[in-house]
Amino acid sequence: MRTIRASEISTYLYCHRAWWYHLQGYEPVNQAELAGGTELHYRHGRIVMISSCLQFAAYGLLLIALIILVIYLTNQLL
Image 1 (cartoon, rainbow, N blue to C red):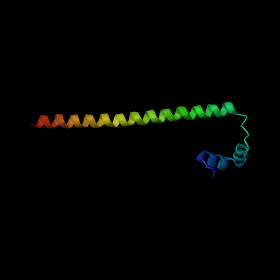
Image 2 (cartoon, one colour):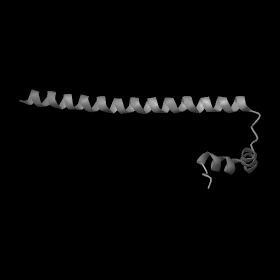
Image 3 (spheres, rainbow, N blue to C red):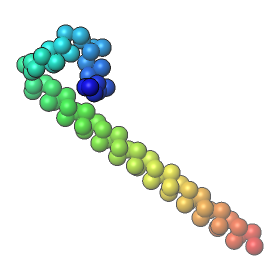
Image 4 (cartoon, rainbow, N blue to C red):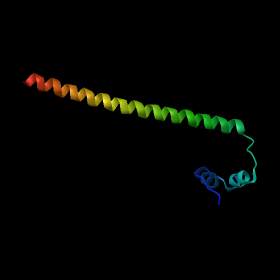
């Protein structure tokens, strides 16, 4: 039994003929454009991952700053 991947379903939904060609073993003639698109998606994924990490770090620093502020204010009251 053959496994159907999500990318294969996406190809079929986008273009039935492209899916059929792929099953027959035909390679697209626009390999350079496909490689450029793959590289673009890779770079975008890295940017999203880095921005998520930076956002997590920013929330952590905000939490630390709030804790320090609470400690400082409680020491001022005593």
